[in-house]
Length: 362
Figure 1 (tube, rainbow, N blue to C red):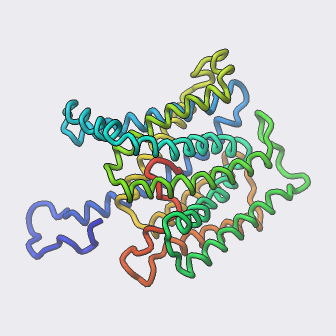
Figure 2: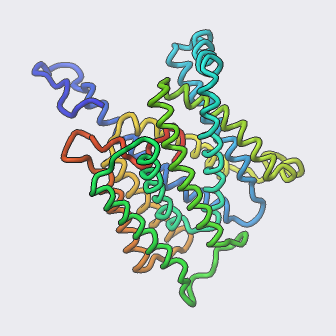
Figure 3: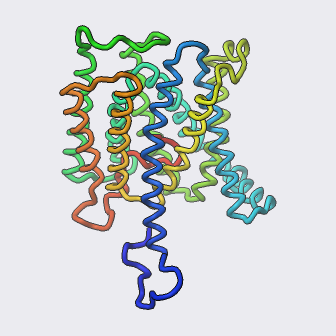
């Protein structure tokens, strides 16, 4: 990423003064702004479509569609990189998929886990308030950090370990407050029945799978190399196949009886496109942003989800929830701070941007 003062020579008078560093900064802040909107809107929109009464779409089909869209978008990007040459694109993909078949098989591991993670997110958001899910899902930072230490030999600073403890305490406080349902609280939203315990178990499993898969994928990128878009095409292809297998195993009879696109409406299609775009957006953020700005993006998306949940779903945050959320936001900021004022030295310890394809948000 270009430095802030780079390229600003003394001959700036005429013509465009937008140097590489200026463009880089604009792309960085634009991508982070879009990431805030994407993270918050994805959780809120999934919560909305999964709590509506009436016909409910099958979430396993949405996971398959998102994987297929993401793989197709990366394929288009590779085609553009080769200036529209189908032959060059085919050669590149053949070398990556067939010529490095071992890597393709290795990518089946994160693809399988990512498919599980995406399905778990639907389960979690269907059973938890959107704001509660957003706060609790930040445990992925903790799981990613632990797997980074175990699998990559990453060293964390004392401040980062302290921030992880603060993160866990904040999430625990939010959960303790949510479990104690106040008498006379707001009635449950209309629609299908919900189970807080099921949602909590799903988000915990999703955080665990997100941490492992992200670090595993990072290890593959570091040891095997390769274009990030080609890797995403491989992930998308394997993920689509794995998603189809999971769909047939979990909801095959329902898909056969109701149809693949049962319950789809414009809101559901928006969720699918949003989820597919989120993985690509993370890749852009990884390319241009740093941990501090990603921390701010995470914090803003949590705040946006909480405020929107108040108006959209009648969510009423109380003191313990607000205190726990503040602890989580502080932990996210502290964890992303670079060590010793160095130029982004702590970037490799980022808890949410290991994978350029999920997190989803992601």
